[in-house]
Length: 177
Image: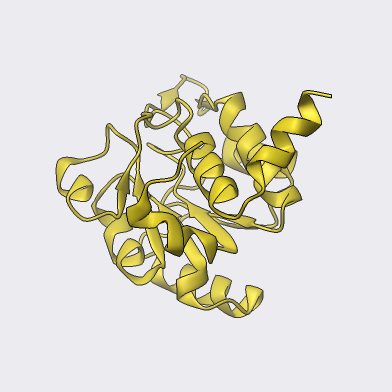
């Protein structure tokens, strides 16, 4: 996969991808039932992309504004160690994450879709937004993805980061043998 020149050098440095959930790992729709239950749809391609990142020395973390047992379940299924829920102001979670991982901001990529994500996007080494993100967010990020939120956007980032770090072709070869 050819990586756009405008982000290639920054993508080579990334050691951590931080994702918002609603509008990034999901389409942003939240289904509530009459029994206080909640449903969200997660894309399996995004799950494989997360798995490939983690197998190739790029950590993945979640910072989201809502609390949801569904998110806890999905993060546990994916083996994501660092996930922060109920973060209306995401800065404290981001600072804690940097301390726990001992990474510099330039080693972090962030993907978000709406206004609360912008402050963290501006601090990171690389920022992404799904194609269907809020228009003002699309004007702020380093790269607008071709995929919509919940429709493979994180997988697209996975391919960009792994290709930039010369790891994607080996992954492909592993599946082609």
